Amino acid sequence: MAYATAQDVANRFIRPLDTDEQRVVTTRLDDAERMLRRRVPDLADQIAAGTIDQGDVVMIEADMVLRLIRNPDGYKTETDGNYSYTISAEVASGRLQVLADEWALLGVSGGAFVIAPQFELPWAPSTGAVTTELWP
Image (cartoon, rainbow, N blue to C red; front, side, top):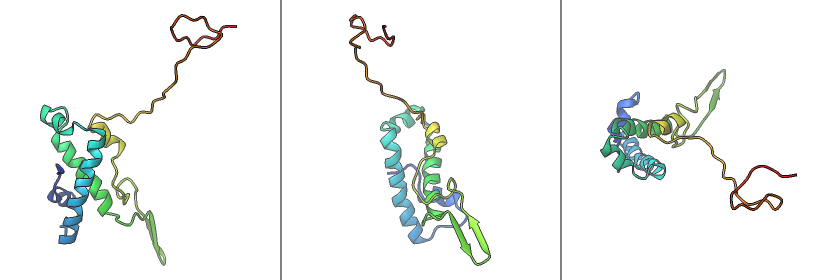
């Protein structure tokens, strides 16, 4: 069960949620919670320990769902005759996603890393240690 509620989403939205929207929001909040727990499996323990602020989790889950319900079809631009507008993907992506700054609030870094194999080079002295210098 998500930390955020449909009411948390409604409080951050520009209008009250109707019955169908409340049902969808509740379901998508559970989806949001699962997404967070995939990267932070001990989320409940960290909240209990005070390492992660529960209010931050509520805000992140609510914002994740708001990005979805503000633009459920995922439109980026729309034109009607002489009128057109563009929707900011960060505000209303139409997808359930966690932004990099939201991961940072949860203590999850978004940095990339490289996995490099370690092996002995046949022309290097065999010391049992890995060396990065090439011998002529």
